[in-house]
Length: 331
Image (tube, rainbow, N blue to C red; front, side, top):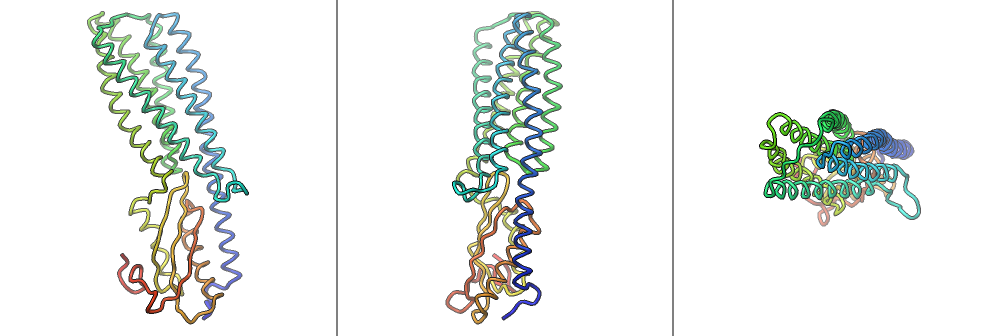
């Protein structure tokens, strides 16, 4: 059986073109992600110097602590830059499946650092509430905290928008890191402002706010951390993504049925493998044409897919699976 709509040479060329396109998409995501991370890196360098210098001069322990968090942010930026650079590298002899999981690993490390920071924030807030600390720092700390909060909130919105557009976990983790820094600066702003407006009796408000926001942000960080862990463990994507990927299989000419459809996330991309069943009397070459056509159909519609592995089987009575059967309802 020959497939006039999918000649062998055309299918091979189409497959090569789509594979190259997937690699270009991965490279583009890496470059755009690096642009966001480098901007964040230099912003954090500026804020670290500003927070530490003004914190020491004004006597604001909260602003110094906020500066420490910016150091954590800087470490997260370094991890993000490393992860995105590695994820954008092509496969080699030592890494035949590519380097995309470096992005998941770095997203895990960034999320973990945020969880640790939030745990420290919760602990310090509770300790400060119990001890009744009521130091009033200099007014300069208030203006630095306000500037840092505005800058970090702007960085969060930019990184969050890019993370959603690129569907990047590592950028989403970095965006959340910007939000935690903005919240930390807000706490400094509340503490200094409350102390200067209401006196020492109002200083407790920033500790209470730190406790509540530490729990809230920690919950978001744990969700990101769990997502990164799932990626590293090759957990299946959600059902909506799976259905979106496999809807292009049965319309391909020559496909009788399919089964064992699997997908996994590798960094910010996906890998897919499946078994496709064809008529048992066609040649090996014709079966190969069908597999190439299935691969091309998925890669063409989903640039976020980096690899598709298709195993061909005969659709005879012994091997035919009821799952994904052409002309019947797909399970």
